[in-house]
Length: 340
View 1 (cartoon, rainbow, N blue to C red):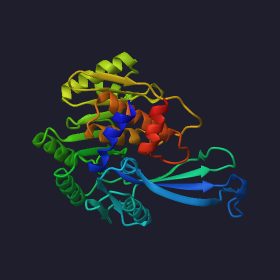
View 2: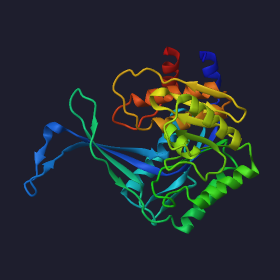
View 3: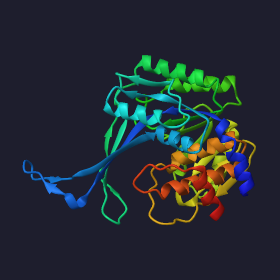
View 4: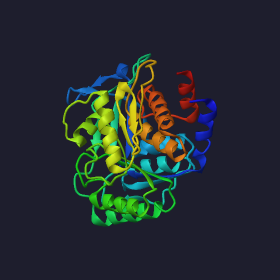
């Protein structure tokens, strides 16, 4: 990609309106100094002394963080947080991000805030080491009233957004934002406006989703296609192309160290190899950076190859940010692309 073409695409980001529908989490990091370890008098167990606590939006919030870092003009989160301390932190973290409009982000007493608490051992002159994570989740079905509010928010935002990004982050179906009722609404919106750009990603796989742009990893593609086995690169190309033609929407497949692949409904298939590793890496958040950059690039008029190159560079930037759920700015992506 030439510098001129990069500028042409990214200069349109400020005029985009992007909705993010999904499970917003709080990523809370506890920075522990291993040199200050003590032992509890009461239990005899080791005590980890936390020297710093930092928090940021995670899950669908990571996609939103990346959109804000790209300078997207208007960003509409559609999701919920609880009336708890974590919800307070998440709300205010979202509120401070440029371009974010919280009209359809719900605070509710019926749910607790989805939280990833990540203890980090931060030794001097060494990359942070993450210890066992402490998660807070919801284990009961999302209440009908809350689902109704989410459906209303999605319907309203679809009238003004250029793009909708969907992230289903929960392990147990019907306990998060992307319930069957919400998916049915999304399908109806796509039927009413086939030109609406919707990119969907789910950690449980995309079986049963309406025909949006699908983004998944190679294992999820294998499961969706019914093969149930590891696919070669050629098999991934063939399977992704067939799925794109069946759904009449593009398909994107992240391939870890092998890069990223995309296929269009017209039969075009492109593969971009991953960029070289430049030091210690942390893969957390790389997939969400890919989602944000693919959709922003497509909405700004990038072709398949260009969108893949931008998303691949963003992932390379993010994985080199160790001990945090990182983001990639246009400057960082440009530097990465133009040096490669």
